[in-house]
Length: 195
Image (cartoon, rainbow, N blue to C red):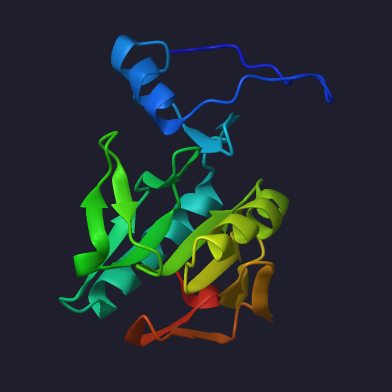
């Protein structure tokens, strides 16, 4: 379904949507089930189409993460996660505690606070959005670790120590640096080697 989207004029009042509103719009066909949208603090955000570099990095990361995952975690790929009544995000990859996942009242995945061990956003055209807006949201919801990966440059920003104000530590990694995570103790990857 092709739908025209506009940008509202700054400073004008806007109607804030809820996840329940989004569910109803999908159910009646106002929003297509295959449309790539997220809900951020009541506003619908259209996500860009994914390019070649994004898909190559994401696919290789998914494979590595699944191979390193134990029985106590789930690897979610483009899973719609309801973080609050006004926030519905679809991270590229999420490592979730097995027992901390449940169905929300709107039929999306709901995760208990701290149940997201690792969230990965692979960015090709959305780098600023992921490093700022999404990083802040994920910290506020207690995601334990957040990676933003620049698919074009094969670099990463590793966010750890979520706080109400952001992250206690953000570290940059290059294509030849090793990436590891406490969420998956056996994982050792280099972005520059992913194919």
